[in-house]
Image 1 (tube, rainbow, N blue to C red):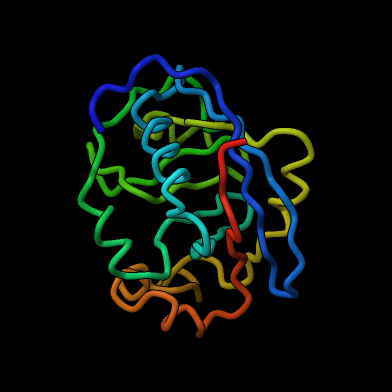
Image 2: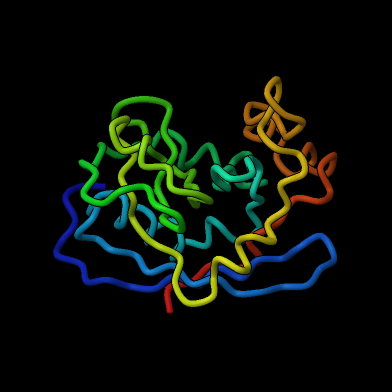
Length: 186
């Protein structure tokens, strides 16, 4: 993604599907002025349908809920190396903000996380929020399944490398994960 044109604030609606097959919407107010490159990439991913069917694979209680390795390994691979440069954090990683996960400098691609607490300590590491959960969305976010916790070896959650390689075939071993049934700009 090159330098984006001037974008206005926009809303993304995630419809979350829980283990009992019930669904509930969560609205994210995306602020391009906070992180223009991240906001543009997020919009691109949402509009392409990338997040539809993605599972929250890493959910650490009182920390964050991470999503963005889709269950189709070829689709993930098509986006994984389309990395974007870092945005300088302009707002803090407070409760309910959404940031891209990263594996190092200028390495953001598809994974995002919702802060489940005030994680302002992430600011100095360069995690730039792109959005915030609005309305009653945090009540829905609180229902995201967190029983697996972090990935191994720190928790019982899925191994990210295996998700990237095996996709949904592997994720079936984790039937309680919360899924993004759909994501769209509204």
